[in-house]
Amino acid sequence: MAVLPYKDKDSGKKEQVTEMFDSISPKYDLLNRVLSAGVDVYWRKKALKMIAKQPNNLVLDIATGTGDLAIEAVKTLNPDKIIGVDISEGMLSVGRQKIKALNLENKIEMRLGDSEKLLFEDNTFDTVIVSFGVRNFENLLKGLTDMNRVTKPGGTCLVVEFSKPVLFPFKQLYWVYSTKILPLIGRMVSKDASAYSYLPESVKAFPDGKDFAKVFEEAGFKNIIIKTLTFGICSVYIGKK
Image (cartoon, rainbow, N blue to C red; front, side):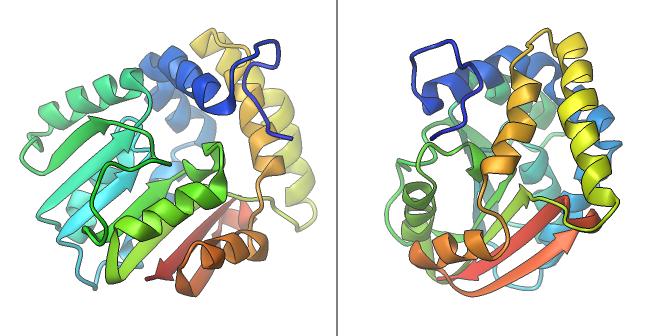
């Protein structure tokens, strides 16, 4: 059964995720920095450095949101161009403002679109990247398979996603924080009571580690590498086409 942001509504996961991100977009970056104590910035940098030495001329950033991963990828991967796709116009609007302020409009293009139905030709991108986005897919296998489709043969897919810590006492501390403290702060700042309750629920339901690697492989990726960060709160997955 799908984990939904708004359990009292009849709409599907995709529609609800869009509504949720439109709702929290004005405060999204602030909350990310506060709730993760800035560690999310480290995770993105660490992940991108893992693929920095390969060809990254044309990059697709899936579920780009406000463009944090795309902006970091310009610095780390030095691509000719990055195209970011997201279903939330609210998030894209914030991202476009950030990109303009950084004078990166010639490097990053933000497009409204469904990450599970990508409007690109087969074998288009050298590299496909996504941070904290695949967990929100309505159909994980379908989304990953389409990411594989638009990746060039020999190209790379990088996925950064939350995972579940397993070591004591970090596992227990993390779940107290994510289920009690995080929703409270998120509700106070964003005024959306559901969005930050959805986060720990979606992490708990998401197939991480080797379970995700199986779906990643089923989608067509091979030579899969898994690296956990910060006691297992975050995992990086790299696959080749």
